[in-house]
Each structure stands twice: as C-alpha cells, then as structure tokens.
Length: 133
Image (cartoon, rainbow, N blue to C red; front, top):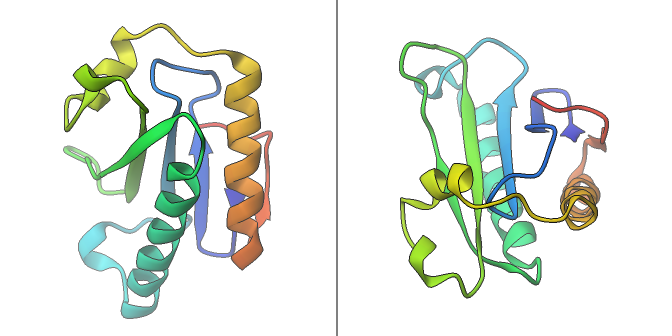
C-alpha cells in the first residue's frame, strides 16, 4: 500500500476484526538486529509516523506495534489498530481479537488504507494501493 527504496507497507488484502492491520517490511532480506544505523533510524521515523497517522483515524483508540519472526529471518513489523471504545480489546490480546471479531466495512477499511498510504507518502515513498501481503 506504500513503498520506498528500502521499505514496503502491506495489508492482508481484506478487512479483519480490527480496524486496520498493516505490516512494514524491508525490501532487503534483513532482520531487526542486522539493520544498519541508517535503516534503524528510518524504521524509527516510519514507525512513529505510522502510529501518529493511524491513531488519528476517528475509530482507532491505539496502535500496537509488534515484531514476530520465530522461524524466519526477514524483518516484519506489525501495526494493529485497536478499535476505539471497545474496552475488552485493550492491551496485547488485540492481535487475537483481530481473528475473533467480525470484519469491518470494506469501504471504511479501504478509505483508512488510502489515508495511511497518502499521509505516509508526504514524507517520501509512494502509495501503491493494489499491493497486499
């Protein structure tokens, strides 16, 4: 949904139980501990920007940022947008609730993806809305 020379931001291809779930990956086959200082600095800036953008969506209460990769060595950072005012989805269980809650409306999900991609592109890179994970 967004990309630049070093990074790719993708989505799963369809709405899920949380308002938005996106994944940031490196183009190059790297893992967290192997990012050079420049890529690590970019990661911090992109992560901060994504959290600000996503948390400003009207129906998002918080963004949980997670890194999993057991068994794999390619860098992926997950952004889980928690639904605002849905108090039983607080904290780390939000990732599990994504598979339990019914998917939200497709048009709202697509509008959110567009907002995130275009606002992130204000700092560089380009939206590429046709791409999913």
